[in-house]
Length: 347
Image (cartoon, rainbow, N blue to C red; front, side, top):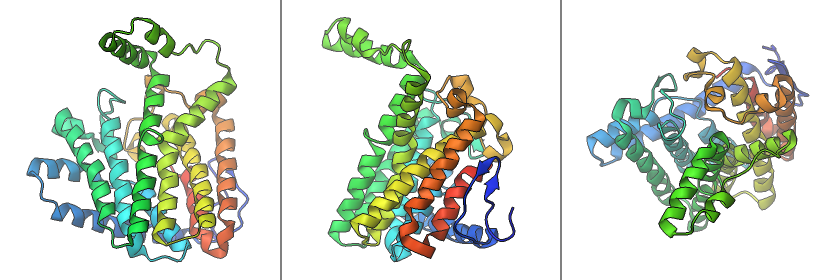
């Protein structure tokens, strides 16, 4: 790693750096923010009046560590807009609750069917499918309860709820997961459409119209399809993290827009990096089994573009992200370094 700043070229990613910050200072700041988030998450669980089995299942997944990228983005966005970290902490915790619930559900046998997450057996492997599903449901609802109780004016609270709801729902993360499943297994759409047709008595026309024919798709259209999936499934929640931090700080619409742009860029770059790590990553560092994307037949950037072109696309997105936050001047250093870290990471 470079001695005067976070490396400008790591693992094949070329960057043009406009900021210098010691790697130690950067990672120290992230660690401090991560510790703050985890302390508040633990306190929220301590106060929760739930059945003990539910508390145990929620704690198992929520407090399993991880990068805490999304809550850190909330806090950094609030920070760069001149706000107070305490004002942004409810949003930071809420978005981590949403993210964790999505991981619990993604790992279920009916979805990605994963055995390991963050280096440990997945929730349904430990607690069974029913309690894993309910733990995810609990985190989803707790996220909005947390936002509703934030010590902010009613306008900011309602805006935070709106942003998170849109990013987590059918127009965002959940919708992206549906598209991902449809791209992975055509039988998913065919089966659900057939069941719907049977219930509604609409015959076979609805089934045949709903099942996508991909035989005439080009490489370009497949990349467009994959980009849409990732912008919804991963990018929407990451962009929402940035905007929620800005809203918590009472930032202007221009600053919110710039942070949204930054979020969309790093969100897509993050997923490309994940696709690459699924090919090249180490199970011990990833905390999950690599090669699952290939096993499941998922659309990925390396499969469509190749490794080098995927790295170049991620690098271009990170450059665009850094340019988006230049409006904040020198105070954008942490955001710029975090953008680079997203594609330089090994887990």
